[in-house]
Image (cartoon, rainbow, N blue to C red; front, top):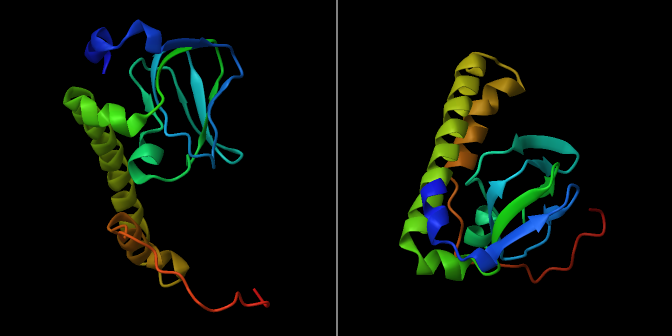
Length: 161
């Protein structure tokens, strides 16, 4: 993504100190962040997902594109400089080059995860216990389509749950 840095407005560039929370898991901010310099940790709950210091790394795109809260927190582990787009969807609609770059980043992530999942499926295909179900579970997760809406229930919540 580095070549598209040239087109970003310098006013979008923000410097943040070590320890700054760039995105908070469970919050829907609508922001898209692009790392210019520094190092961040991506955490889901207490689990460290990744440590990232690659300029051009994108954060917040899943939340923005899926219209859901952030699935992980992004925290600066060194002072960082990021480009901040407060309305990710509006920005992505306005700049096809950046949108295509974000799509390629997401496609690469999906390719990596799918490759890993195929390996897991092969490893556990012959297991007769719950590990043998890995194939079915992964297929349902990977190819699940999001419905346009989620119908609710008119029933009262079950007090036993």
